[in-house]
Length: 97
Image (cartoon, rainbow, N blue to C red; front, side, top):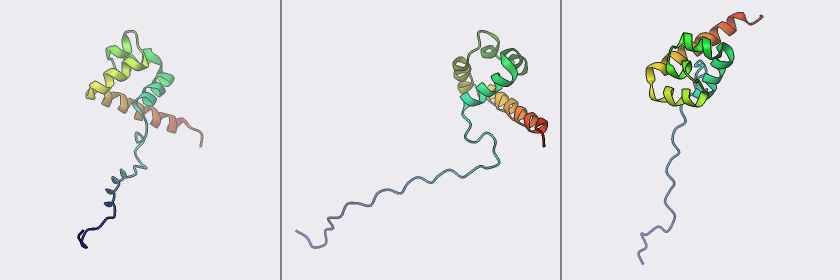
């Protein structure tokens, strides 16, 4: 046996760095499902279909079908996220102070 050999276990790999906190990002931590559900609760399917005229909102709408479409279609997801931010601004504006 060699005296230079170290029988200690190798050091574990460093943990991945945590993503930076985003305290001013209202979309941070909000799942797409929660976002769509909040929009449906606030606007309803008919108004949502008028605001973002995509088939998943106009023909036999459901949360699962909307999620499948929005995950595959970046431009539609951006419109839905933008509408969600608008809804949050309106709710904040109307909140009693």
